[in-house]
Length: 85
Image 1 (tube, rainbow, N blue to C red):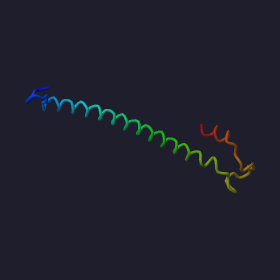
Image 2: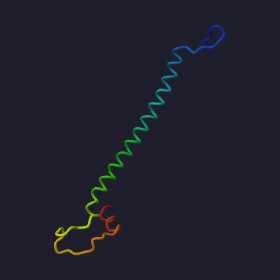
Image 3: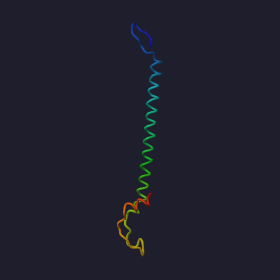
Image 4: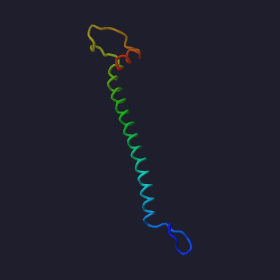
């Protein structure tokens, strides 16, 4: 702090240093937030991919899809879970 006509003033260099510190903190927080969002996006993409790969298992077979095999068109969740996981 510098004194100027009876009151304290902040030098331009000191103010610049303080602003740069604040900018660094803000940039770090934003970078961390970006990384968290990218991780969430990656997790969602994996979940969508898993859902798409299990979609065909969940659909009941159509006529002629499995010749010679008869069964219930209803598939239990546990059976699908075992196949998908």
